[in-house]
Length: 254
Ligand SMILES: [Zn+2]
Ligand SMILES: [Zn+2]
Image 1 (cartoon, rainbow, N blue to C red):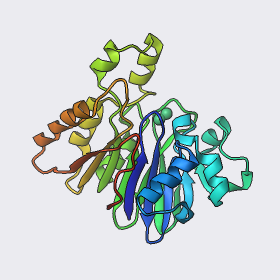
Image 2: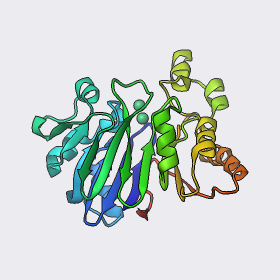
Image 3: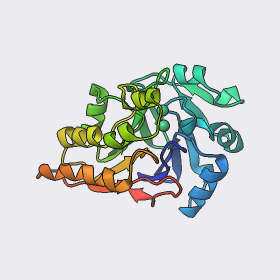
């Protein structure tokens, strides 16, 4: 299994997972053109994509789905709540309904959806297995049992490190928005995210990618500095990386 974060942040999220000569996407919150360009920068192409798995209805996760799915004939997988609460695709036959805790076998991978706490109608995150386990956990306000299970199962973990709590509290956002972001239906702060990995990561966790960093309420340096508290665990030494807003990460073997 190989992985690249094509884009992550409130301007658009899209993750590429490849196995042999097939691939899937988790979310397509950037345009079809951007997906195609970013894949070509990795020497990949969109015709390999066999499914687009959608976490929830927010625009930064679904913006590019319609054009991408129609252009390359790609099935879309989403929960009923997500399907009902946004426009995904004008070709209805491409939309497949999944349930939480359901596992879809596709492209040699097992993709498991699990529910999480966020202000969507029926939001999920995904755990992807073949011989190793990759979990992609963004847009989550609370460390629930499902998140803990995914963190402790992962060899490669992509986890939201959305904001620095002090920057959010002292920043320019209106009061209601600050509350929404910091709430259990919002996003994980650097500290909540780092403490979750500190407490629940196992030593098989070799790679850790910080994702969905806020442009206004965080800096890459602050996020990385917060995660340096993982040094408290002598048995846990993941390589810590950042996802980027405007550029795909390299295509990494898991
Ligand atoms: Zn988001
Ligand atoms: Zn969201």
